[in-house]
Amino acid sequence: MKLNIVLVEPEIPQNTGNIARTCAALGAKLHLVYPLGFSISEKQVKRAGLDYWDKLEIEEHINFKSFLEKYKPEENNMYFVTTKGKHVYSEPNFSEMEEVFALFGKETKGLPEDILQKYIDKTIRIPMREGLRSLNLSNSVAIVAYDIFRQGNFDNLEEISSYFD
Image (cartoon, rainbow, N blue to C red; front, side):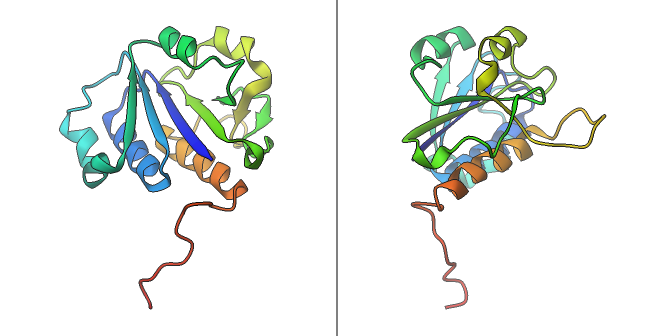
């Protein structure tokens, strides 16, 4: 399975660096949708995932509209991660999909409301206690991304550490 993590207008460089590290560990492609709240050359971004940048596939998009024109939600297995999601992130059967796109919005506002309404059946959420706003973006990406790979039995990932051999 090919996993695409899409960050729409991320604002915090450390989150993006941590997400880049998670993507490198999984072999997931990272899509950065502009405008960003920082430069990807900033040391905070690189510090969070410095030794992983060369193992990472990144695609940059000038804006969300251009991303949606290139990767049409109607033609791709695209899931919009939001606290307002209709489904729990573990409900879709990702194991039968060749390619998946998991979209995450900016830290302060999430994904655009009109997009969430248009694709409401493709919205997923991470359950939390009532009254809490949200989880950290990099934690949310890790939860969803690793569950997608768990459903596929962690194919192409190292299962047993050779550390103790």
